[in-house]
Amino acid sequence: MKTRRLLILVLGGLVVSGALVGALLATGRSGTSQPELRGGPYRGSEPPSGIRIANATLPSYRGGTVSLRGQRGVVVLTFLDSKCTDTCPIIAALVGRTLPLLTAQERKSVRAYAISVNPHADTPSSIRRFLAARHALTALDWLVGSVKAMRPVWREFGVLPAVETGNDNVHSADVRVFNRAGVWVSTLHAGVDLTPANLAHDIRLALLG
Image (tube, rainbow, N blue to C red):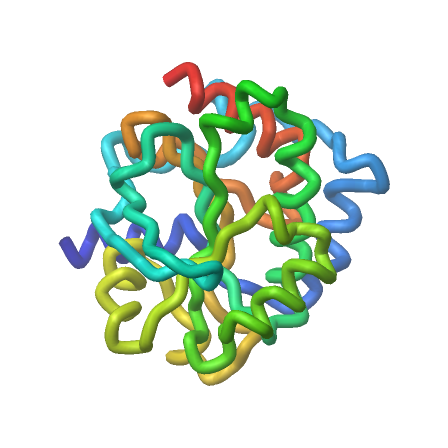
């Protein structure tokens, strides 16, 4: 179990300084850059097979709760801090620009969630301001909870949260795609392979899986 979590953490990666520059270079103005193929059908990196989404039920900042494993379509998952000024704004903006690329029928089968990595900062009002500034209010739901409640979720996903680093800009920050069966099939990173076109491509493949 420890080896699995370490592997997930390495695959997830961390926020690093300069990510904004990298993301702008990767996406360009149109957000349609095409990285070279990585040996598989997905444009993001592909994790080891068979890793399922965590069996977690968390409160949404909008109200109510969300069962991750209870979703019936494709799940796009990321890990954000509403006080982060480095990679989090990029991720939220790119996810917000991705969903309009999907057809109306495809969007019905896709859910995008951010999991809080800093419950102290992620209040409903701070989350709403953060998402509104990135035009992602309708695209991203944000799952929250106390630090105590979130720790087992972070461990399950192999995530390093900002509350443990003590820095809003230093935490796990990737975008993971889970197919209809809840299996993790693709990971994309800002400044590397996360663009609206690439994320839309991987969502469509996951819808077929």
